[in-house]
Image (cartoon, rainbow, N blue to C red; front, side, top):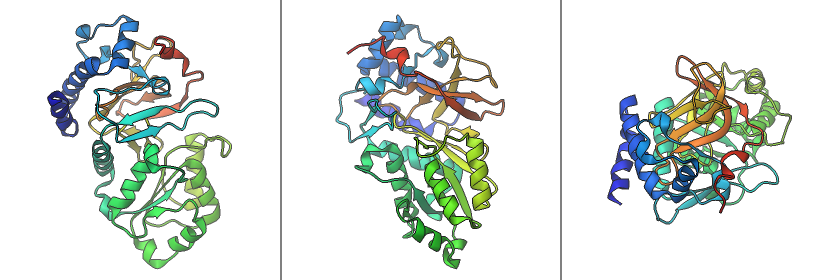
Length: 330
């Protein structure tokens, strides 16, 4: 479709708030026609797309719909399906990804905005590898970073921590610029077995205790990792299977978005209104790279935006699947 192609070409060209808003409105117009689930949801809310004049008026689709419906814009066959990790005993969500090339562009451009060229890094991943890598957005993202790094030592080391400990103590590897990226539980396991100054390294957590350990706040987690690995700060990555874009934090869990992604904080008592900067609420996300699913998502995460423009993730809703799904039964 010509309109999709034209919109897609502009996603990563966004440079200003004005350009973001204009493209977001164009993508909303496209998805309100081409995404049947999103259209039905708006009808259930009694919202007419014709009356939406600015992004604050756009209805955000609850991410829980990805568990109960096929959320797609257009009719193309998906190249991959990313599954959410979900809660034990619940069905996972499914994100049907029409274009892995689009996802890869988003991964690479997001990373390079915050960290520069990927080719300069040794990527060390502490993430369990299970099943098809194309069913996990996180595994797919990290596998691409490993490939693009061009370093023969880059790889997944979750099952090889003993080897990794030895490797990191060698003079050659000590000198290399590296990123140690992993789920929280694996990073803690590694830190306990390493207990050695980690040199020339960015430590980046992606969340993910998932019952593996006692739940920790981000501040507690970062404090342990900084002490054990003797690094000044711990970075974080924020993403989810329902998105094609990541946000990054370089310290204290203060995240920034690339230009084609925007965080808005909604009132927990009125999901169709937004709170002021510095006030906590629930996180809504506009991800313009989600042109083939839904770019406007109401998440179950709680957060706030600082006056400087950073956002923090404070926790999650209880019973977050309830709102929205009951409005639209299959």
